Image (tube, rainbow, N blue to C red):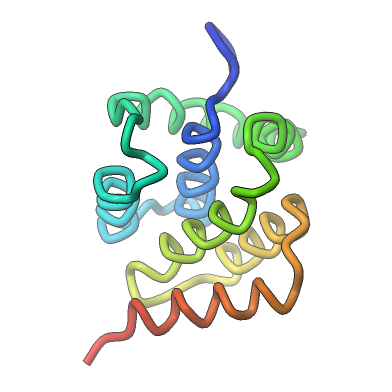
Length: 139
């Protein structure tokens, strides 16, 4: 991160969600609402200052503009995120991508990157993906 302290674990979770949403260069309203809802209601974010979302988002956008920015972003995320929260990060990313009821190939590729970078077991990833899909089904 640029100006002050390193990312907190919660910042890293927000960064993963923002990166998943922004990966196709189109952050849809449903995705933004999903991020805000998760930050407002999930226990992992109980003590988190939601005002930091904008700063973390800007960090993600800035890194997306750099040549090796994605690698740098994953480096920051891995440094800040305890391994026990890797699957949480993947689940949050899946929820964001499925929040609008559709997903692009670019978003799916980003989920694959998250899965690989955070060393998510393939069987666990499949269960997480299934959970996200069924949570976001429409009538």
